[in-house]
Amino acid sequence: MLVKRASDIKSSEITPEQVYLNRRQFVGGVAAVGAAASVPLVLGRNAYAAESPTGSARAEDKLTPYDDVTTYNNFYEFGVRKEDPARNAGSLRTSPWTVKVDGECNKPGDLDLDDLLRGITTEERIYRLRCVEAWSMVIPWEGFSMNQLLPRFEPTSKAKFVEFTTLLDPEQMPGQRSSVLDWPYVEGLRMDEAMHPLAIFATGLYGRPLPNQNGAPFRLVVPWKYGFKSIKSIVRIRFTEQQPMNSWQVSNRREYGFYSNVNPEVNHPRWTQARERRIGEFFKRRTLMFNGYAEEVGSLYAGMDLSVNY
Amino acid sequence: MTQAQWVRRVLKPVTWIACLAPFGLIAFDGLTGGLSANPIEDITHRTGTTGLITLLVALGVTPVTRWTRIGALIGMRRLLGLFAYFYAVLHFLTYLVLDQFFGWSFIIEDIVERPYITVGFAALVLLTPLAVTSTKGWIKRLGGKRWNALHKTVYVSTAFGVLHYLWLVKADTTKPILFAGILVVLLVTRLQRKPRAKRAKRKATATSGLGAVASVD
Image 1 (cartoon, one colour):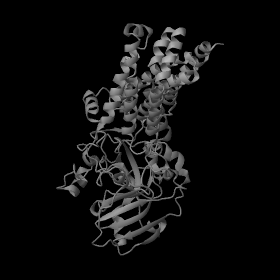
Image 2 (image 1 turned 90 degrees about the vertical axis):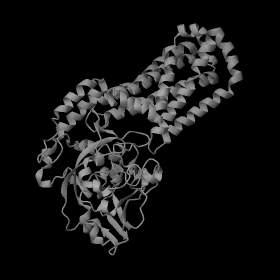
Image 3 (image 1 turned 180 degrees about the vertical axis):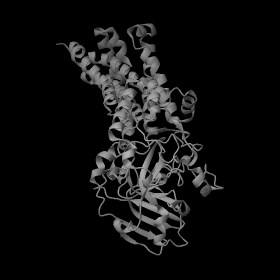
């Protein structure tokens, strides 16, 4: 299991800034002149990544440089191009931040984020992130298991699902002025998925507070599902009896399902999910079932036909 | 300066520079770290978009020539068309070499199973004979009629190219729909201008042999 505690690894050990900056310049340069064959050799050395300090991470999982994690984002609230969120997310005001909790629970309310997080200790979780667009990263999040927080609201026996909503404010989120998706962005999990220890709320990455473009101040990270399930900048948590819709399913039901578990055997109708490109690498790698977390989460889906429940 | 001289001495060099600029910018960004964190995807998108835009501009040459009645402009069509093909080939090579690294089984699967890749590949295949027969020698060898019939398929290639773009985007269809709109406008102007085309042909025949053949289609 790829879970590491903050005490195991200092952020200063991870990737010196200059190293990854140089690396990036180099990769870009090589790609441009078309000297393709020499890339894997250089990337194979992995001079830019720290060795895994615990041995719990797979040897091939090198952390994706901070610069890449924070400049290559899908966050349509700030524009549809990958570089848009890093450029436009400065307009998001992350403090004060209120989260509304409602639905099938005994303790609903409008909570200030600081109050919500009181008494909760975050830890570092290094997770693979697999985007439905067939690229992936390895990111050291700061966060905590959702099962530390959700029981506080005392969900009732009717609470079978939990739905999350992103902020809706075109003033702060200029991308919402165009109707590429049905705003606000909504995502959902089955309760047992949300209560699984691997599912976290994240408030930071690389030992720093979450940059706005990465979903500040408060987001989901569900590492065995495609990235779009990990909803950003959450303002509402709602417990429901019925399975909620999620924005991408609303946008295109044939292509995006509710579960959206990483599954190399179930192709997206328009592109293969069998392989992925790890950001910073030249050769594609095989995509792993449940993004490599099958041992931990596989039992959640026992007996389900995953090609139907995609 | 005559119109023909103006086209040859000013417009052609400017077009060369404009057409090479996107390639230069990609190379520059590559060398200075200006590409995205996923440089291969970046190069793929930029070569593809540039190819499609150049193709649409090339298709605009004939109507513009007719409206302005500057016959010499028609010579721009071959230049723009060949640059469009240049970017289409770069786009495909980026996919073949950088993205897939000659993973033939994956490439064949893509072409067969993914409609957006099927039509994109078809567009490239259809453009190839047009690029090959773009020389004066080939116009003579084929004869104006057959050459024109062959080169009319550029509308099919462009439609496939636009479809390729439309089918691959996830949610924001603004640009592919804009491209489709431009293509429809270009097609409509061609259909409306049929009778005048014959006059233009007679006029052009008198001035230049190549222009004559090229302006009929």
